[in-house]
Length: 298
Image (cartoon, rainbow, N blue to C red; front, side, top):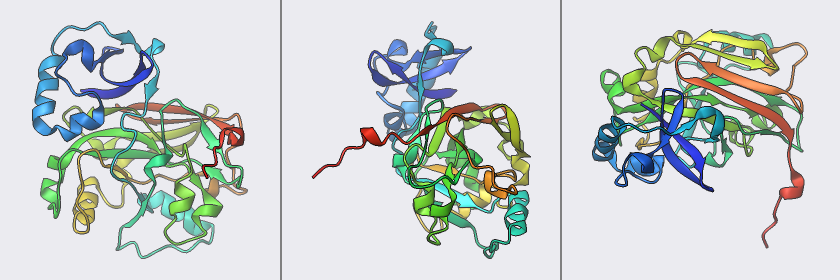
């Protein structure tokens, strides 16, 4: 199944995507959860009800006439891993930047307030021009888990999505954690939906690429991962409990703006498209940060 969140009758609503149409849960059965977050919280019983309901006919809305939102707007965790494609490691090395000890996985927090929809604008910050893109495969956790052996890692995955780990490079380098440079508002477009794991036969070998204004700037495959999907989950769960709905962004191949000479930072008006084979695409326009909308609360 493809699990989406759509804008319907003035509110966010969970839906399945089938045959190019989005069918709201409420139009399949009144017993289904009211959000994708609630679906995950309901566990296998909620998923079983959805699978039964999904077999029923439902006309839904064409994807051309519906607004897709981020499928999960506030997951418990949004984590990213750095230096996880060999090609990206080499482009960073070529720029003379230090490379950490890659025997360790390099994880960072990306704050969930950065999440935005698959076709919503991303902000060019008022405080920096060093705006960069990173196409990434996202893993969505489906079961509460700790100390997961690599051999069992796929059992805890609910599905996969397309992610863009938008980065503000000068802020990223201000501190070893990289958190601030990774967490500006709107800098985590995800979606366009969650494709459940049973429909993704080979997540370890998917084509992944980024286009800026129609020009391909990143072009790789998930088979290039330094730490594979199973290894990432096993490593993280030595430290923390992963919970349903948590999202792991799995790294990016070469071709980021910072890797070019000179860097080709994103500019206002440009359109960034991230594609992953079989999972769909994101397409986000870069706009100036709307400072006029900022609210200061005393």
